[in-house]
Image (cartoon, rainbow, N blue to C red; front, side):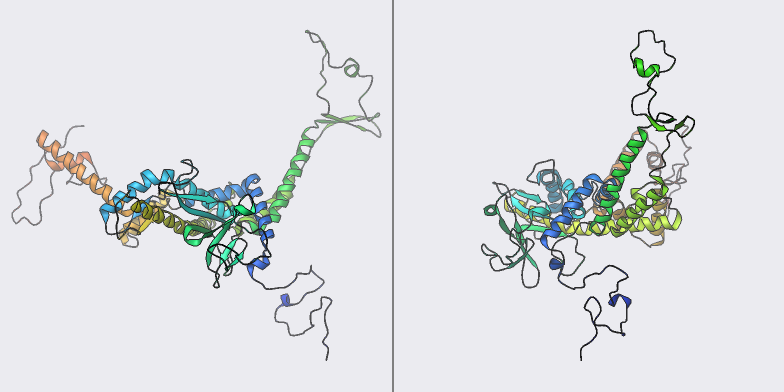
Length: 510
């Protein structure tokens, strides 16, 4: 028996669980379909989205500000390598080679693109383009180098060809420039040259392809603001039109209503023009043309100031709504992009936590890229003899920028209290401040040795108690010092069965 269908050809049913299951004429028709991501977003559509995203980043201050803020807080000027292996001496030498030699010249484009600047640009590329590619290469002498390529350099010329036809990856599937195996694992990337004969395929071991995946079958990244590109384009265009309207309005200063609807031809200023002598005799001066508009009056004449009420609070509120929706989808606080948002108390703290979570997510993604880069550089450096070999060479971490905060004083006090109560350890606290624990301990050890050596030297030279000198050189708290009380008395050894009484020394006169 034939079933009834609606105007869209769908079977009519009275057993729909959700209202979304049924199309109706009350709203625009949405074509239904569940497909793979690369079919939902074909290669040409992806290029269009990236093109619009780049234009918004170049012209829209809010989009550019949000993206640059993410990169600044996620990268900053931190990201110093920290060796975590057992071979401490080798780690110290490797750290020195990385920071003093390789970081400054790692990119094939030159020393302007140092390691940390490249990481900043990588973060921006993830938001603007959706993905980026790094080629692991070397100079003629075998010195390790990296080459950054933008997203549009990855692609395919004929979308109907879905199989690699030649080269080391022949027979593998290719979609939108990404070469995949049967499990959708990336095994290579096609780099587009100036012409088709210049195209080349790079295997995955020789490159780093990075994007922020949001779907399980995703093979290319999407710009962070891809969800709001059309709305942001409309808001930008509306602002351009409002600026034109404002320019036109600001060019009119006065409106004159008279019987003629035009300037009075008998006005001496009109007859004589603006020519004058060195001794000006006119009691009034005609302003620049265009600043006065004339309208024919029905009865009587009047002169009034031209006032414009555009763009107005309604326009401002609508623009703000668009920007807020765009930033919500980007997981970035509106208050950080537009000062004076008026957030206080819990709302402000929730926005800070949102920013911290977004920054942490970006840092974890970039950390995998940075680790791959320095491990490649170290392996090459060991092969060419720049640094000695080590079996524990691959164990590294990075110092990160200080944890995002708008009240460092309160956060510092909270960290101290957590440390006293054992809720946090020193390694975690230092990590929040962008300081490596091992480096901190080495520096503290050196400071203590220097302090004790200098204090002992002064005590022997001036023949004064060591505790007094130590107290004068460094005071750890407001009421006590490292070497004893503020009177300079040294602390007795609790293991001494018969400690000698400490001499009483008067404090120095200041």
